[in-house]
Figure 1 (spheres, rainbow, N blue to C red):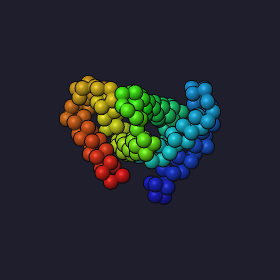
Figure 2: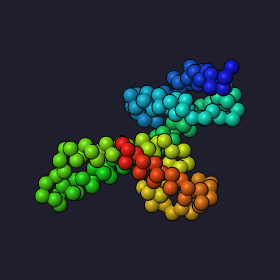
Figure 3: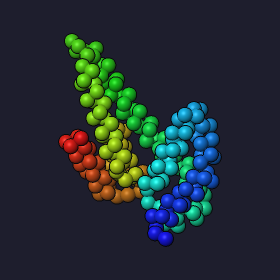
Figure 4: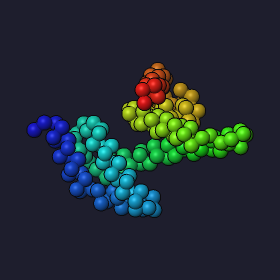
Length: 175
């Protein structure tokens, strides 16, 4: 059997065995069944698109911990994306108060589409690369602080930042 087939079968088994638990866990955490269902779905999509753990999904010692960690990371990503959107909207509101007229609906739409493209670009980065990029550019963390937090070298953080900037540039130029 091919490794990809085994990976998909492992994910299917993980889904059958733990989806209802994950959904209930997220429902308790979020207080909203619709958001919990969406995030449970996104968790399995993330696992499906990720490389399988070295020991394989079928032999995970703590499958629920693996699922909850993946879901928790998605929650953090969503919170960051929401902060970006809220920051942008606050900036638009401030601009509207100081300018003769508010931005046109077309300008707002173009800006929101650009933000969505940037968000997709950041999602395409490896987890540590995305984390480094967001810590540096959203939270103004220094490269040494990021390196310590991610357990990598400062040089690796610089590589992550360069990859993130390049990916954002590619998306905005060709998006």
